[in-house]
Image 1 (cartoon, rainbow, N blue to C red):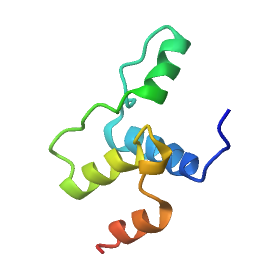
Image 2: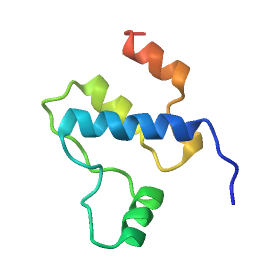
Image 3: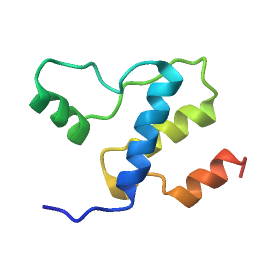
Length: 84
């Protein structure tokens, strides 16, 4: 088992952010919790529509990356939100 990394918090907040922005989950939900967990661990999230600004779409994609080490970290996400 891998140790918990601060990127877990980024992922959790980003998943909630995605749900609030779109009203949808990051992946199509199934009736199988194992399949849903597999999607969280191994599949990149579905793209969102063009109605969201490109910077928000990019930040959402980077914060929800399946690899914690490739996720946007909190400090960088804050700078990005404030407009570099």
